[in-house]
Image (cartoon, rainbow, N blue to C red; front, side, top):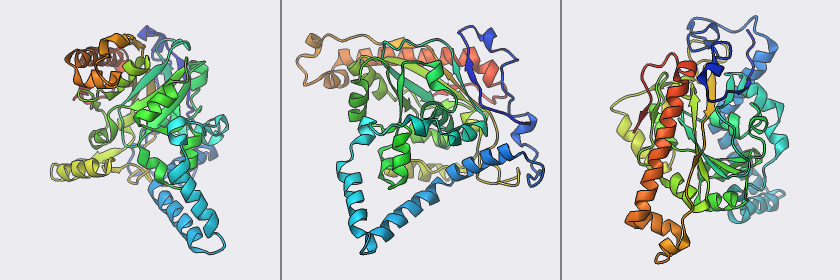
Length: 381
């Protein structure tokens, strides 16, 4: 069976996302739940290409290690030392592109490699309602999952047709700044339009004017530790920074749910390990879940993700008010007023609650279409 990523436009009426357009779920034949199955013979070449791209992507940590080693060797050799040192100086001292998005390349985003990658699951992007290119947006993506595959395919590539569904929006996906400390491979992230999740980045990207869009994975690394199939436990209640940034830069907030993001890997959870994992996550800024899935030639065990669909549904925009500068004239800036004053915190809490309400509404509207085999309802913590 060959599955390809589909670009779908689904209006607010859930009936338009009926059975004919709904993807196969975890129980389908393509999900590789037959644990004793092997994939040595009889697999179409196209599917082999899909598996190859996912295998290379999943091998990110050792590839990052090789990148460090390669630059180290070049810096050690006398003939290549000047070039290597110049590259390192530029990367760590002078390059501002992780906060400006200046290296974004449509050629990289439209590369066929990403289509093969997204077709593996497959990933589908669903538009619940049109978004005006005359506004600026902060998309909140949920959940984080292990890696955030749905967010990468939908917003860092054109594999599922973001520009066709949302014409006029210039989108950038935000990630941890530490990802841009890896030499060589960082250039790929930058060409895909990934930027670091700093306040400077919000300012630089959202000051471009109409159509500027940034995507934040709100739950962050902490959510990866609870990324169990069939569940959606979202860390949101204490995550209010994106609301403040929206108020500062005059954007609208848009909730996004990646149905199936938590289903593509199985996660080993242990009460004994959880304190250690949480401690490491706070120390390094990223989490270390113990996950497993399928192998290259077997469905039984491995570290590749399962072929299970991810359906990324983009919700309706939640408009934020424009705050009169006279209101916060006693503070150094609007951000200080939003953080320190009682009135400012009240405004943030009010619109954070509206965002949470919009997120729950989006879930309730599409859960029976794209999350049929859930083991529990979505929970905000």
